[in-house]
Length: 443
Image (cartoon, rainbow, N blue to C red; front, top):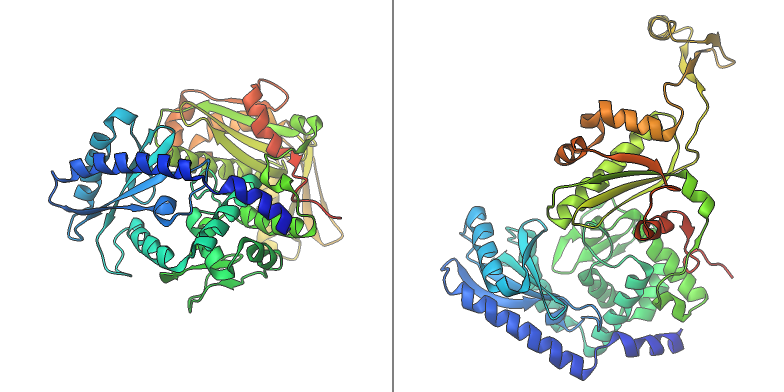
């Protein structure tokens, strides 16, 4: 393991020349924002935050976060309005756009480096008015707590998470944030110790110190706010992937864990993938991702109600125009007839109700060995494509979040994964229909 870690270290840690280049970009962005805040008395300060400020940024992925500090008395409306004005004015030459967390913030790019202009309130520790208020305290804490060696260990962990496909706190990913990576290194001391500790982590294990009780698979306590569980924002699937990846890397450490994944995909599975495609009016990436994830979950439920077993589901958007919802089904075609289970015959009122509701549609009704009344009924739709198409035409308000209903009314397509998929979308479905050999490895 130590040999592999040593090799990865060289690519994960920025060179001196790259550090100089990144600092020049950061200083330029800072100066542009600094010129704009002079116009607003509600703004009382400006500072770097995130991985750049803490010295934990990756060679190939380094955002620069600039925090605008507002007086705590500033209203939420002015907070949002002024911060966006500052963000757009300062980044006007660098194609600024709005991103969303708890509050909107402005993002832009300078020489392929993302610049995030983020508002926060100038508050005392613990007196949070917005989620971003913790960030300056995160920076102060980590700059004091992390040694230079530990900062490089954070970079190794981030690289591992990135190539495992679980790095990033944005809605699209619901993975491990840069800050979570820092907290893990702070708790365990090194990348190697994180691997060994997570490989044997127990359900509901608490990483850090807190008196609170949390209902997540594991608990990662924010060191500057013991009432906050950082793992709450991470999906259960990604927590599972992290644990299995750590176990697999411990069993057989290879450089494959730090390279793009080569998954085994079965083309046969594509015929069981149900796809919903639609176009949407452009909006914040975080908003559209949240909407399509909710739509995917909702339609998974409706497919199950209709008799189709959903094995896995996912979603994708190009964040500009197109969105896709994917459902891996046990089968896209199910039996034309099904049995509907009723109550035991001793339950008089329930029996009467079941019989009266189903007698006109039943093809056969009987009492089974468990004393229950059973009705054999014919399905309206036994093909997944037709079932979901009809459902969306007649029940849009039931299956689709309100924010997407207008987009769906303009049109949508439902089809199987063997048809109409572009090369890029086929690559997206590959994750749904493939096995990750690095995670599901056993000697």
